Length: 301
Image: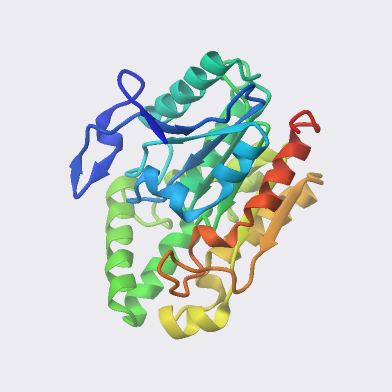
C-alpha cells in the first residue's frame, strides 16, 4: 500500500501519539490495468488511516473488480471543515487525474466519525454541486454517530451512569469539547450541532440529510442491546443505531428508494477477536462491493 504525500494535505490533520506526523496525504490500493472506479475510505477519530486495510477486506475485494481505494490521512477530525475538505478533494482529484477515473465513479465511506465525514462531504458536494469537484455516486457509513445532538446527550448519560471507566472518560471529553466548540449545550446553541451533523432528528428537513434524497446511501450498525446494556450501561437511545435508523427513515419518507439500514447483528469484533459492535467488521465487503457496482450502473465488472 503506497503513501502519497506532499502538497495535498496539512500535516495537522494526522496525529500519532498526540503529535502531528509527516505521514500525511493519502494511502492507495490500485488494481493492475484500467481503473474503473474509486472508493474513498475515512478512519474513525484517532485511528490510523493505514489500519483500515487490516480492519476490512473491502479494499482487496474492490481491487478484484478494478476499483481503486484511497485512505486520506484524516484521523483528528470528528466534523468536516475546510482543511479536511481540501484534503479529500485533492486526493480524489489526484487519483482521477492519474488513473483517468470518471468523476461519476466515486464512492465514499467511513467508520464512526469517518462515516460522518463521508456523509457530510457527500452532502456538501450535492448542496454545492455547481462548484464541487465531484459529487460522489453513493456513500456509506459504519456505525457513525450521525446526530450530534443525540450524541451529546448520550455522552451526558454515559457520564452520569459512571459504568465503564473508558467510556466515561471518552464521554467527558466529548461533552467538554462540544461545549467549547459550539459555545454551549444543544439547548443553548442547537445550530452548531445541526450544521455539523449528517442528520438531525430535531431539524427541519432532516438537516443535512436532505441533500441525500437522490443518492444510494447505506448505514451499517450492529444493534446488540444486550452488549450495550452490560458493557456500556446504555439503552437503545444511547446507541448509534438510533440515529442511523432515524436517518434512513427520513430518507425513505423523502422518496429515496436506495437508502438502506444494514443491521449486522452480532457481526462486530475487533481485530483481536474481542466482541465490539462498534467495528469495521459489521460491513460485509463482498456485499458492499456489489452494491457499489450497482451504483456504477453496472459499468464496473
